[in-house]
Length: 384
Image (cartoon, rainbow, N blue to C red; front, side, top):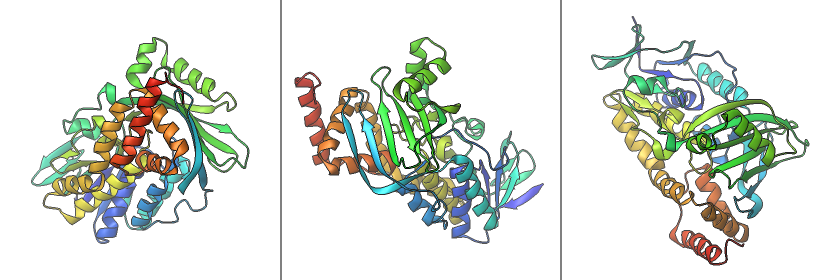
C-alpha cells in the first residue's frame, strides 16, 4: 500500500495542477501526488484563452510569469446573433496559449515544488478509515478530482454527469492569420442559438478557431455532428480554413453537481464549472483547483466543507448571476440588446468581459440598461 499522501489529485490539467500548487503554497511539506492518464505535453481541445483573471490566479499560485512570453491580445470583437457589433479594447489584456504548452508548464511547476507526478488511469475509489484508497494501492487523506468533463471520479462517487440541456459541444482547430492579428473575435449565430464561432490569435501567425453549440440543439438538426460543427465553423469564419479539428464537451455551470462527496472534491470541468455565456473554463479551473488544494491541506478534518465554503465565497454570486443570464440568453434578442448596449457604453462592455471571463456580477442599473434596449428592440422589430 502506497500510503501517507496528504492529497492525491486525479487529472493534470489546469484544475489539477492548480490544486497541487495551491496545496504546496499553503503547506510546502504536504505530500501531494498528481495522477494523469497521459504524459505531458499533450494536446487538449479548448479555446486556449487565458483571461486576465486567470493570470491573477497564476500569481496566487506562485507562477505569475507562466505565460509572459506569449503576446497579449488587447481587443475583443463580438457580433451578436442579430448582427449587433462591438469592438473595443479590454480593460486588461488576455493571452492565448495552446493547452499543450500551458498544461505542461503547470505540471512542470508542480514538479519543481515537490509534487510527485505519475502517469496512471484511475479506475476505483474506496473510503477506508478516514482516507480514500485509489485503485487499492494509494491512500490519501483527500482527493481532488480534476479529470475533466467526462470525469471517471465523479461517476465513482455517485454524482451525475451534466444533463444534456446544460452541455455544449464544440470543435476546435487552428488556422493561419496575419502575424499582427491581435483581436479576439466571437461571431454568434442565430440558427440553433446559443451558438457561436471564435478566432483567438496565438501571436505566432496562427489562431485557435472553433464553433460550439448546445448538445440538444445539435441533435435537433438531425445531421451528423461533425458535418454540422465543421460546416458552421466554415460558414461563420470562411476566411480562416481550420486544421487539426477536434471536438469536446463543455459541462456548463447551471448544471453543476455537488462539489464532491466524502473526502473527494470536484474541480474544473469535473465540477461542471464552465461559463454558460462564453464557454470559458480555465479561470474557473484555476480558482476551483486552488481552493480544493488549499482545503485538502488546510482543513484535513473536513476538506469538502471547507472547499464548499471557499468556492461559494469566491464564485457564489457570480455563478448565480450567470445562471440567471443563461436563462435570459436563451433569447437571442437579449444578447442582441446586450451587445448593442456595450457598443454604446464602455462600462457595459467591460462588465460583459468581467462576467464572461472572470467572476463579475451585474449591478442593477446596468442590467436595467440592457433590459431597456431589449424592450426597445422588440418594439422596433429587432432593429438596432
